Length: 154
Image (cartoon, rainbow, N blue to C red; front, side):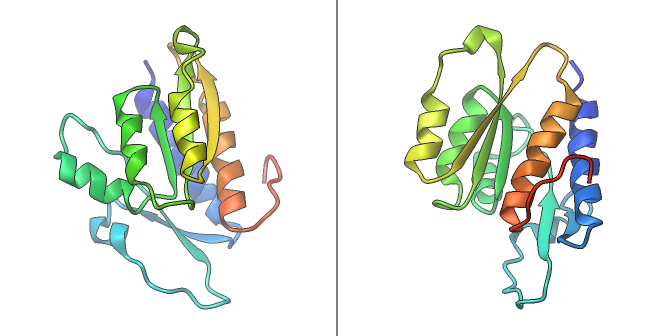
């Protein structure tokens, strides 16, 4: 119901997180060639965090697999798109599943994540997604990714 608000909340949450200097934010929609930039960082370099959203009804499957193969945090509603988690970098990623009450008890994506060595987070949602809850979960995982302790509100 509020997908544009959720996407903008995540985008701003990542951008604000990176203001601390822990990472460098790039919007892959503004700079698509940055998505597969695998530049080796020096010890004092901040981690590049790139954000994009993929519409599976618009992008070819090959494009979706390509993007997911270079993803550290995959966020999706419970559904077929989470099947793309099979292409996440082995043992390095986080899967955040947005799950409504009606699919409660469906643990296959959680099991897939753990079997592949990924971190799994579930955010319970209703028809209107609590943007703050999703952004908080993303920021917690960003802190883990860049080796920082998560402090809410910072």
